[in-house]
Length: 622
Image 1 (spheres, rainbow, N blue to C red):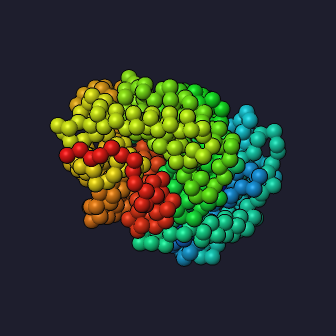
Image 2 (image 1 turned 135 degrees about the horizontal axis):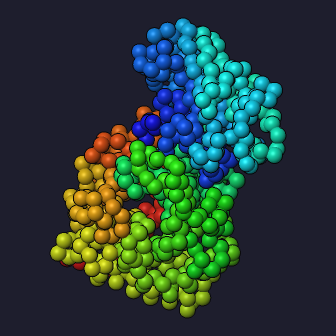
């Protein structure tokens, strides 16, 4: 059975990633890319769906395969060290994936004796095709080779594993000073054996440490929250697909937002919605090269006709992300279906046009290249938005219910025209004037139809009284100034009425959903936890309206929800006191970075609305 979501550690090589449990089991690994089929999928089922566990044996601890377990990342790195203190001694397992230089993916595990003598157990079950395909395993020159179709996994170690019961396993004893390496490598099945061996484990470890230490040394932020910011930046870097600069939302699929429910999605893709906040976080912490790579990925991906823009893409810009169900997997704690691909790729979400244009103009302000080609991309997006901004869409939360006039979508349409006006040197005066008129028209419409004067809040969609945390972003993007009474009232209403146990929900959950029926807005059964990004948005909103103490209190509470390794999933469910959703989640770690920098007033000139620039807003209403 899989562990708690927050009990998993992330290791990765910036092209793929593995999740390692507290019990020493690699329960999730897709090779050779983030979105490839998993060869270890116990995370969404059990050990029969593929795992690789190295841990003390049942006979060597007060509990089976346990003992006292502690773990940490080596400072400034993505090198994981798990330490077991057992009845007979102490042992550590160091897990990492060396960054690739055109090489094949490698996962290295080094068992080291610290004191005494500890009997260890290694159990390997390779299952290709998301836990469905049993490979042909054979021993070749002291290696284990597992082959099925196009995939081959090779394990090199001096420990002799024996096949039994559709797995390979071994027991071995480590004493103080012993180092026992295991090196697992993926290769195309036609390519033969990899060159990397277990004798290279220490060399690979040194190279991996050096890479991460050198990278984290480039962080320009050294403030009060530097530990949390650096860990989040490392996580963001680990979710980057190095060959293209694309950043996946998470390395996992179908970890549920509602335990036992149907809200299970594949997040191993790149969302345009994350564009501006990701770019801002990288620029404000000194990672200009990564910011440039992300912006270049963005520009390449959306190039072409504005009508063809999708909300998400594959790591190399792929457009076909068809959704299907892995029916043979029982799901995390019975949460089905297990989805591969994401049908939301075909939705219309008008806010992404604003996000892309905002990111491109933010990059220009930061000195990233902005040439005629970039301007052509902006112009194509605006031409489409001119014709369609007034239409309903599925909105930021990718609802699978009917399209509506979501307020956040309209705000981001306003952002698109507002930012284009700022950088309109290459536009004709007629286009500039037309965009200004559209921008002002959108602004007036939102204030008229998206604000509930009786309740004192901007709402989820036109004509509703429901709340939606996404409207908090109107302050960050400069739609209205922080002192506007409508803004302050909206923040306070969300703080009072859209919070569960001090954490912010995405939107009002219909009573029908709470009782097992279908929610009126998102078209799904069941409820969900508090969306962590929304709580960070409230931190920023409280800070902007002048409630610094409230912002700090909420931020520090959110930091306390991180795992022992500093990781966050998508949501936190106060009902169960645990993290839920895909793990780790970029859309949680990026606003964490943003909130920390805002509270410390760090590099404000790289914000999407730089300090000192007044919002182009209508006069505040009494």
